[in-house]
Image 1 (cartoon, rainbow, N blue to C red):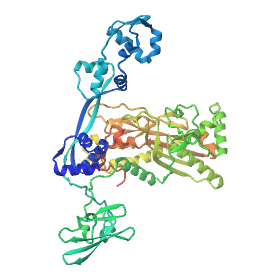
Image 2 (cartoon, rainbow, N blue to C red):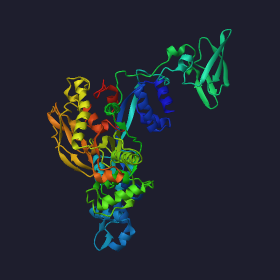
Image 3 (cartoon, rainbow, N blue to C red):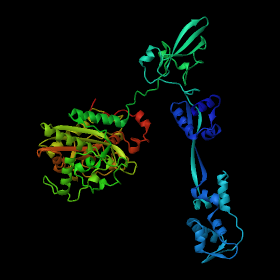
Image 4 (cartoon, rainbow, N blue to C red):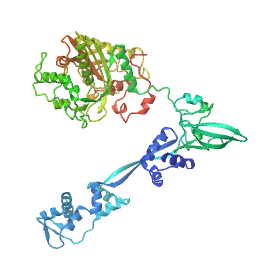
Length: 595
């Protein structure tokens, strides 16, 4: 309804000067009008300009005083006309906040005599505060001093109202045109799927007899005469409760006149999706299998306990993890494996002393939104170990790229959800040297981006540099991780803030653990990349793996390399409801090592 009102009004008028007034005059909800304006503006039916108005409104406290009177007047009226009243008795008659403010303001106005006993100094007062508040409610303007006085007492506040002024756009039409997305078989056969009616004609002198037949139920619901001059634009066919303008019907041969939605053939799709797919392809070229990642809700057991992460670890606190209220716990855990995990946590095993605490099943049963995709890795490795018990052990290479969740305050470098890239290799006799070699292979394939000349836009644009230049230069350093030993870490690089800086290279807070880095040729700095290590025996042996089977693994975020590839320094411009759609439409694809 709002759309018809806007387009219909502009057909005979040059401008809608105020969307708020326009909505009020027609009994429309302004939010609905605003949504329609945004939609029509996006399709260039209209041109819209922002309108902002600041108005003075009453706070909740101000609304109470406008109704009941100011605190000072309420207190004054509670004091008897003759004699006095004790503080204790007066406090019983008033709200504590009213009493406190009323005493201060009434004494300041010299209306009452304060002391152990409170009495009136005058017999009549004027509630000017209430009068001013009522004037604001009525939309009247106050003087500067009165405004400042009420604002100082936090009885009023400025409220910003946002609306639009609207004019006809370059593609204006009094009615939104229906456009097709694709040329389909139905178009070529003689009718478009945008309408369920097929028209058939027979000649009757100067007129054509038109029968509208429903494509859904094959029944005829509309018969009429259509002049050769007017065509079918003025006819309406009704089928049950639905109505369609017959101008929407495309007859045989009219597919040449179909209007299609605009396409930007220079656009290469969503940045993060393309980067994700390219990294997936690199994993596949290295013969990795993708793990199923559709389990967003996970138990604490698979997310923490199975990884040999103690139950008192800070990461398991509600300040860092989203725990579910319903269903709050899981009832599906392999009991024999749970007992093995409990034993290794409490008393150790496989060369470990354990953590020496009382392991609690109720903590392991808690459901949460997974904090890392390693929860999936733990399930896959357990399944692989169980399969090896029935048949011979089979080496595996797994990878995953999907969402994880952290209870973080959202800012330019943090989100409550992001994507984690993880790879692991399970085989006999693996060592730290194998891990380093696999990492060198993985990142050197990413480095092929520069060698193949696939830059973000133009090679000469240093700002749009590639993250993966210099990926063949990796540097490692020992580190600690609850479920990997050894782990590898690199020192943090200094963020540059000069004009030749790359702010997108800043570590994205919770997105990674800094474990290894590559040398960035453009910045001449070591850039942190991700986390790596070998899964501990305390994690693998309870699953059922033999002592000669080891697992090497690494992980990094998806958002961080994507931000660096495309020169984005605010993660909210890449992921979430504030994503810049213009960036998606305009940016060319940055290929990762694959033509």
